[in-house]
Every structure is written in C-alpha cells, then in structure tokens.
Length: 194
Image (tube, rainbow, N blue to C red; front, side):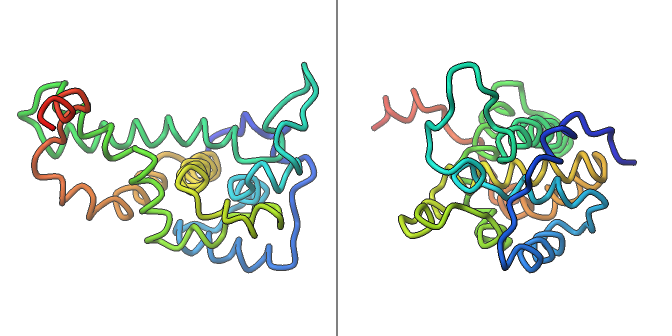
C-alpha cells in the first residue's frame, strides 16, 4: 500500500530533465524492483542538489532549501532504512543486547556501506549531478552515493509502501548482513585498542 506523499509540493516542482533521464529512471526502477506510479519521486531522489540548484550555497537567507533535490527524500529514506534494519537485526540476532544491535545498525547504515551498496546494485550511475560537478567527480563521492541511496529508499517507501522498501533493503543488504558475524567495535574502543 502506497503512503500519502508528504513531499508532493517538492516532487512536482521543476524536475530535472536530461537527455538520458528516461533511461536512468528505468534502470533505477529495475534496481529497486518497482515501477513508480509517481515518477517525479524517483527523479527527485536521484537528483543531487547541484543538478537542482546549480552552485552550492546559492540560497538566500530564509529561502527553502532542498526543493527539487534529493535532500528531503534522503531524510525520509534514512528513517525507513533505520526502521527496516532495526526490525531485521532484532530478528537475526535475538539474543543480543541493545548496545550490540546499535553497533551493527550504525555499521549497516553508515555512509560507507550505503555508498558501497549504491555502487554494487548500480544505482550510482543513475544519480544526476550538474555537469561541472560530474567532471569534478562529485557523483562518485561517498556522501553523494549514500544520500542518493537513502533518497531512493524514501521514494520507494512513499510510492509503494514499507513492504517494498523492506524487500529492497533485505535483498541489497543481504551480503552485508550475512558478513556481520561479530558486532563491530564502537569507535572509542577501536581507538583505544589501536
């Protein structure tokens, strides 16, 4: 069941269009395993702020930020990913305490892991950045890929509901979850042991 879109005003404003936009969106739909009823959500999810607004910092004080870029959907996707991962971790590690689960969660939703998964599933190639930013390699930055992955999850949730988001996460993160035999160490312990 799809969720009413609280981002509708943002999703309908001046979507970024490029010559390869239809191909990028089709590829992203195949990756996510869902044909979007509201393709504007997916377009927005895959649009880096440089492609939506031009130069960074071009906002005037008091002006709304994030309209047309993936920032608002990233916010939604972060929450969806956290919920789905928490649910999965509780199922997978029924004997672990909250602290161990929290370390696993932090690892699985880290920017590094999100970017690796975006690359692995092919979503990285679907992210739209401004031409000058693309030449500078911005589209391959860990934060850009992680943000796009979260935004795509937010769009998937809003268009198709939690079950669709859960299916995608469990498929895409399957190897990462399986490889997480021991909980990662918290950063303070890692530094002390170093």
